[in-house]
Figure 1 (cartoon, rainbow, N blue to C red):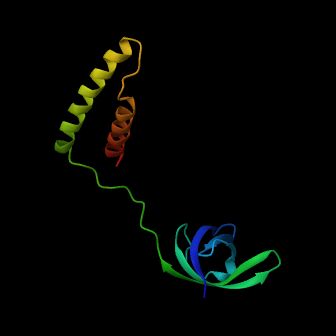
Figure 2 (tube, one colour):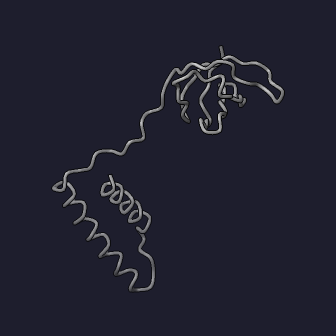
Figure 3 (tube, rainbow, N blue to C red):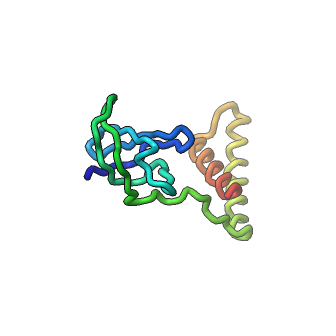
Length: 124
């Protein structure tokens, strides 16, 4: 029995595709999905294959592995964020001097990375 990962599946549309381990895409119709099973992108599955009018088609699907949850990480405690914010203020203060002199700071990529990471911490 071949295996692969769910490329995408829409329960509303009633179909999707699996990328088999050999690289080919296999059509998944609603009839191949057991009642109560919700296929999600990235799930590892075993499946039977039949040749359909337009190519390979999954006949039965069993879930091997569910991808990890993409739930947000827990927020840091406010006391832990004080030092991070103070360091960012010093970093931005140095950057403002470069901008006043008419050029971007040499560490502008680093500043952007720190800002993105801090935004993630505040948004978690």
